[in-house]
Amino acid sequence: MLQSVLLTLHVLVAVGLIAMVMIQHGRGADAGAAFGSGSSGTVFGARGASGFLTKATALLGALFFGISLSLAYLTTQNIERASVVDRVESAIPSENSSDVPVAPDALSTGSDMPVAPKSE
Image 1: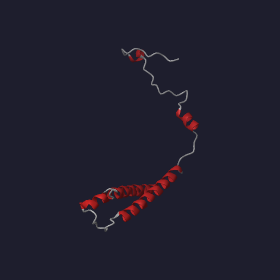
Image 2: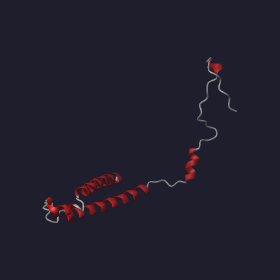
Image 3: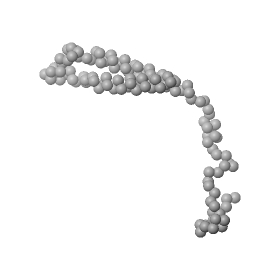
Image 4: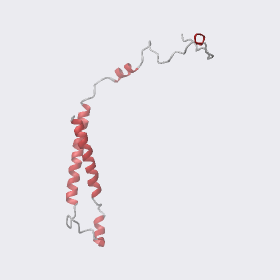
């Protein structure tokens, strides 16, 4: 339950972080405003929104990092501790079982197919 909530929050924070980074303008955009592009007068004032957007991006980045660590910790708590050798031994079929199907005997079925060789 906690992992589902954290995973949902993680996705929302990631989308918010992407949006915050995309909203911000690059460092070169201020130089364009100095030469008359007219973008220096914004809603946030002459300095622009750089203070707010920088702080919001830093907060979302810290949340993303913290939630990532929390999810990693919760995920490692559910792993069963077993040896790799034990897993390999359980995956190898025993000598008595065979996955190869047995071909029907041509004489008993009355078929034109050749008889499969007998394994000894």
